[in-house]
Amino acid sequence: MGRNIVKNLQLNNFCNARRCGYMDKHYTNFLGKSKWKTSLFVLSNVGLLYFDDPLQPPQDLFPVINCDVSQI
Image (cartoon, rainbow, N blue to C red; front, side):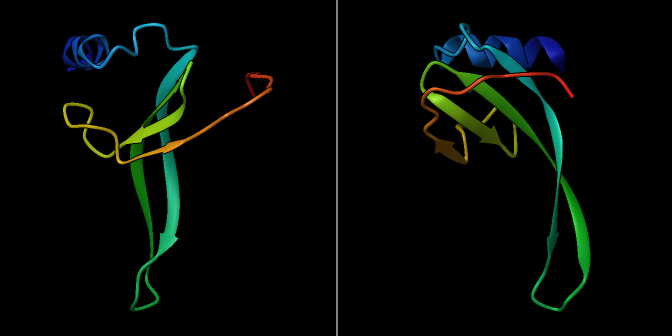
């Protein structure tokens, strides 16, 4: 699956990504049940993108200007 992700990122011109990885996002559904959802996030020259499915177009783009990226 990792190769498909890299191929998809290259097809979408995000091969110059600064950071790429999976994060778990916590949310509560309309019934009040707490859930975790894993998404792929890519920090590139256009901003922070997140994908529910790495082989599909990004779900959203968050523009990022003048930021520092550090590992925690």
